[in-house]
Length: 143
Image 1 (cartoon, one colour):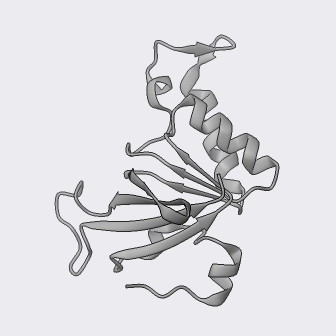
Image 2 (cartoon, one colour):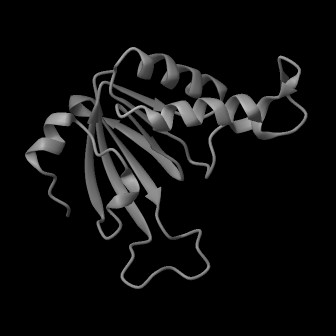
Image 3 (cartoon, one colour):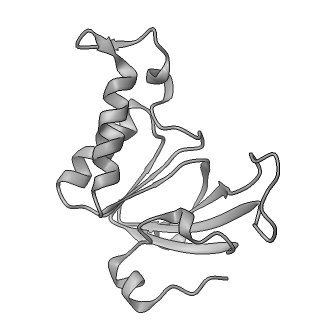
């Protein structure tokens, strides 16, 4: 189990979930948990992130955007995936936003805790030595 520092707990979350590669269980605390990185989830994350809320965006796919990643969708006469890329770039630039792809949320528990399982190396043809396959996240969010 990874023990987070007091500073990380005060901040409420780990900025980049991928830096903790050899751990199996972690805790993340934020103001808002958004499950689903499709158009609605991305819009909600951008809005909340701009407002200064500590946002955790969880999606089970390797790439955010959902159905908008298909070339058949257009926004303002441009392929919709351009909007997705623009929003993801903005979210990556916000220190108060954590994005967890390849992560499936499950179970809503007491004290507003949601569990999520992150695929760390299941999708890799050859995982690194001593790298865990999956990581369990316990996420606590106010909303």
